Image 1: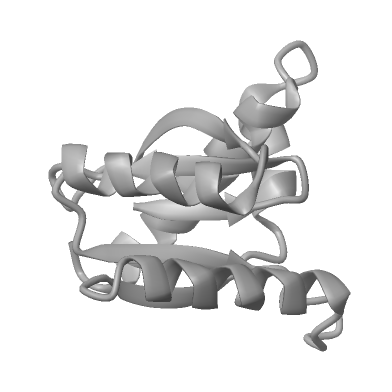
Image 2 (image 1 turned 90 degrees about the vertical axis):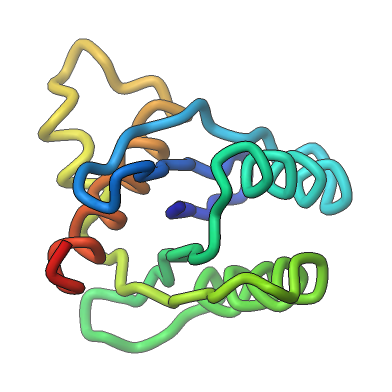
Amino acid sequence: MALDVGDAKIGVAVSESWVIATTLAAVERTGRRAVLNALEQLVEKYTIGTVVVGIPFREDGAEGEQAEKTRAFVRSLARRLPGLTIVEWDERYTTAEARDILGPGDRERGRVDSVAAAVMLQEYLDSEGH
């Protein structure tokens, strides 16, 4: 599973085959507990063992405030689901790639976030030789 963590929504993608990433609906950021509950349900439903989380580095590779917010979220996720392997992934260009994939007529925010998560997950799967 991959997560594109934003302030309003978390884009989600899964790969049941370990070959192709597929988007799921974005999770609304309605509160930490609700988000963690929703993600825990997805982990159970899809029997997830690894979660790839996008870290939003700046263009120059430095970390900013959003990267720290994402890492804080990762720590919460790790505490809530201690059996998961969590992989941090450079997601600098995934939103732009998602917008290119969707085209100008289909850029609803949650959909862009989920496609960005799928881009990230596909990169991860490809890097692992799947």
